[in-house]
Length: 310
Image 1 (cartoon, rainbow, N blue to C red):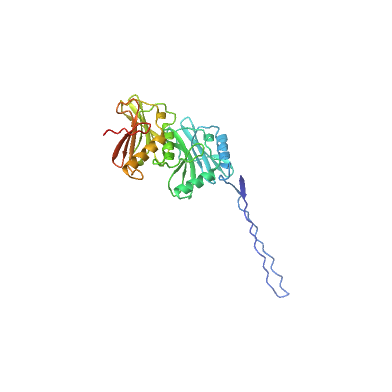
Image 2: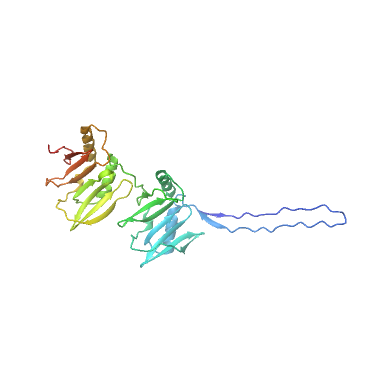
């Protein structure tokens, strides 16, 4: 919705002085009012306004090849690529125009900005403020996070904790790998559509859940850390571990096995630093779960049966 901020008119008051009858009274002096310039403003926190301006930016630029979108309560811009050149379009004073920008194209992921749900920008800002404990200078960006994966992020000025959102507007929530809910979310993020993996595990100090996939002479690792979206890295390495279907691994069984181990140790829950590795390193027909919890090592089948050697 476009609003116009009207300038106020200033009027000077009249004055007169009593004089002898033979003297003519001074004429009234009036200051001519000077209206201020009218500047259109727009509130992108209103439902649907952020979506509307994104479509306007696309229409003006004539392309959907975006590498960056920035939205605040009153400003909107989009950087697009043609060839190897980046151009930034922005909503300024009631229209979309080309503006100067430091954004350059250096091979980052290109995306269609219309695919990202910013309809409830106010709700995303509110959620981010609760998590980051700040609402100062909030700005939403749509940009590559890592490994060609594009996410929406909300940042503040001064800078606080960056909060991530999925393409559909859902929060990338912090996962607690000692809970079934956290295990399931991390599992879904790292496994995705993979049909075969070589290892699934949980890093020490709750550093996240990961899966490793062998591709020729490299290992492709996907990690979901507690506060961050999943990301992928590769390293030069070969493996003799046999691949298996990740659907064999059930987060609910991991959760119940962890509870069983803690109960056997007489503790309420695992101390930081607990780990899990799921693979077929012992040459078993099916992978097994190898836990290290509070210094104790346990081996469990995928059905949660304790088969620790004694």
